Length: 481
Ligand code: TYD
Ligand code: MG
Image (tube, rainbow, N blue to C red; front, side, top):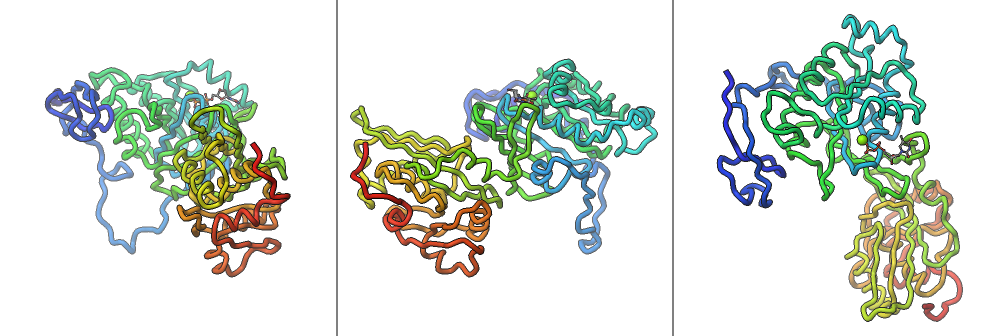
């Protein structure tokens, strides 16, 4: 017999309180407690081990090193982020802003894994006689109608009969369909739209999202099919619903990008089966998400060499070096307070760099508006891009272009000194690969560098001032405005 009780559950952190309060005592947020009926623990308890079966302790040396036989994913950029394929029974939560391309990417994944779609395999699967690897792919949509998904599939030129589309939000019937079709992969788009009869609170509520996800997760583990859940994000960009969602699943992926730019970055925030440093780069194209295998080349494609106000930074996205163009524009202000506008770089970082440039390199910015933009809609958070940002600003202010064959790496300190950055060899290799012949780095790391890539000259500078002397070409014109 299952007993129920009323609790007040925080919609931000998921903690349950016995009484209603204005402020959640756990996370400190206001007005987030929602009245919720909870079943007692015994009724909710599921199988204990990650495989869904009761686990027994075993000696460490007897455990196989990598017991995961991964399902290869033909989409290389996605495979890289997942850690080299999909682990059967793993649960992946993918989240991101509306319209960023989650449904598109997952439909493409379905098509890639559905095989050539021989109808025979499908029939066999429906008889539940075949093994899991031969079953169809099940795409469950709680938000879009089957016809909408068909439209998207047409746009992506997906014709395989091996993808079954189910437009349903009712957990119990979804579970029944999973049981019947024995799918090789299940996508649930989105987890916030699913509801269960057994849970009295409304669809989309914290309890519904948490408990429905938990039940889907148990199905995936016990029947060992990989499960991809789409999760919505809140205004602040966090996954909507209970925080525990992120703890329950094996992998959390974020699809990011600017709406008006076509590049999309797939990052992993958590991965039990791989590194969280990997980043996949895609471009939203006419026919779905196209892989960008050489991101640096793509980000530099429209660059105008020898134009003032443009500098190339070598930043790291996880373990992957990416060359990006930083653009700056300085122009005489018409306001009492000059404006600073940062696009793709941290605003406070821009203020700091502008202050260092004024004070240490005597570049007059006090009466200048300064705009900085990272080309391609990329966000550059790394201090290693400081030198390129500073050089781009100085280049615009002095109206002198940065040498076209030069890339820049280095953090700028408050005294105008250049500070060392990590993973220099990888950055240098990437710059050399893209045809740059010179890289300007902090002197301290230039000295330590043993084998720079062939054809690449590594220049060292101690201060920002020195760096600007090397980087900027042309006449030392009076400051343009
Ligand atoms: P979608 O996958 O529906 O986003 P999400 O599921 O994250 O909300 O993608 C929607 C956007 O992508 C929409 O603005 C149209 C665009 N799009 C393309 O540019 N090319 C395509 O091939 C497809 C399918 C969509
Ligand atoms: Mg969608």
